[in-house]
Image (cartoon, rainbow, N blue to C red; front, side, top):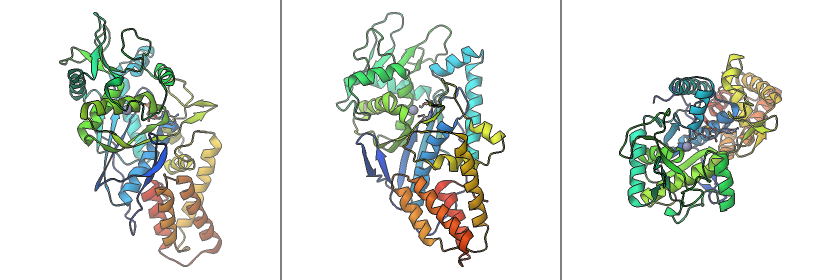
Length: 413
Ligand code: 5CA
Ligand code: ZN
């Protein structure tokens, strides 16, 4: 698929610091250590509803990773998928008497617009499950051939499942015990109770065609893929056997990232599949996780229609650390709009207090597990100073404008 439009990133003086990032698998903040090219796979949307603030927050977190790496001199190979065929999409299409293809295309188009307006840097490869069908089926075929997967004992629908015992390290991403895994997989699209599986956490790889469901021809028989193998195939085929960062919201830790890593590792023998498993916190509204299935959503597109400056949406989300769970209230947006106004005034001044140290301090905050709230406070202090006392550096306002744009994606003019 075509990704959304690219955004210009101003060049900053000097060079950014090496990024340290929390890794879910080891439970520690560790340096990312990419080579010249840093590789990142971030799970994309399932396009059955519009982008809400929760999605936006997650994609902004990884946009900060992208920007920090670029600032540190890396070329970033970023890949994202679109789950444009899966149960939730089909269920929504049936509920609304919609065509699942049209629904997916419409919501993907809206997501692309939202991302472009929010100045989220686009992935180099933006890949739909449907367009990747052959490569997904091929990976399933290889997992079956190597014994890492099996056909369930069901004569009508001999679906293919992944054997969770196929890799020695299964469970290392989430660190969960079996009971907890079973509960989460039941909640999040898995089928731990289906008879005939070797282990309850074994994940569907290929669902044989059912009447009234879309299906694709393949050597496996007509059918459609499971969810985790979609991301494993798309990532492996573009980024190779080991990647620097696997990203998504914390609701993807289990089963999605656990199983995706296991699929990849069973196929390649390379452990760990990702050097960092990085997860953004969940945003809630009215006490519940913002989610398409609950319907308690604040849509980015609706805010845009109301004339909200996208930079204020970014400032709203960046005011919370990416790993924290938090509840959105409209006052957050109002505060961000005030802040944006003050910053815009400050960078419009003919001179200000020197911003050379500010640039280094903001780089330090972001390199420390993406401390965007800390970075915002530093810029805030500079803006207060600029407006209170002036300062005499004529280059400072432009430098602050550029650093807010390049490192935080916040455009002030
Ligand atoms: N297509 C799959 C990933 S392969 C999927 O999870 N799609 S999604 O549309 O449900 O979610 C897209 C991304 O937004 C995921 O990374 C998910 O973790 C994140 N996300 C969903 N809800 C929230 C929320 N309330 N707060 C923060 N992030 C969220
Ligand atoms: Zn995914």
